[in-house]
Length: 312
Image 1 (spheres, rainbow, N blue to C red):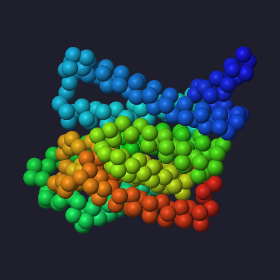
Image 2 (image 1 turned 90 degrees about the vertical axis):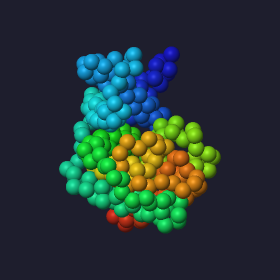
Image 3 (image 1 turned 120 degrees about the vertical axis):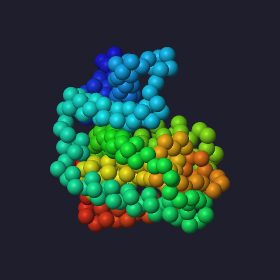
Image 4 (image 1 turned 45 degrees about the vertical axis):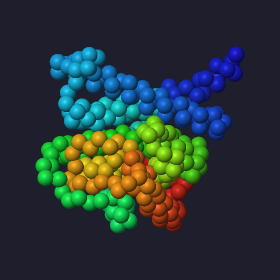
């Protein structure tokens, strides 16, 4: 009985124990991932529902704000999730924000934004040149205010996922495993929650969507190792989503309900060049762009000798 009790104490997400076999520690981090993710989302949903009630809406009876407002509430609500993750990190892991990846290298956020912008533009442009996406000009009535608000929303959303996957998960794994293992496992955990958006895609699209999610997660991880901070990964993640969704008006991870965009761009047919209904994140072209980026970053980090460094 004492061994069973000790086992559950070791894998509990409510402590910062590390003195256990490596495989058990990996299981513990996996549990922490889902504990923090689901716990934060449940609390966040509760807060959003409370806000709706406070504003005179009863979401339990279908009384909601307009779709645009609900989208903004959802995206800015990620700030609540980030706050919950901060509390978990401080109270249960007994660690600082610097150990979470929020170091003084805030300037690397801009580097991440520039890198993400270049790569998403290259990916879309290559698919356009291949004839799998048509460019139909600029929309006449652009909702500039909403697009700017969505930029802020994506900043919150990208930061939330990076705090969880790069800050908490990868940060903890780097304490007990090698960098490749930490990158691989954190990328797998990043990919799994996105699988639910792939149900309407065909087999080949699901394959490339998984490949691209894994590759872009590796890019985020390598940027984190290079800068010993998650700022660059946050910037890259947020700007990639924003440009793809609100600038180019393309599907984002299977979400084809575009609220507002600058350019009118449409997929031409469903093929592995444009990623079908999932969007270019299930495109073979994007896979090639991201794979080349991974190789370049790996070479740079290896030369700098930072592959074995932690986040701090």
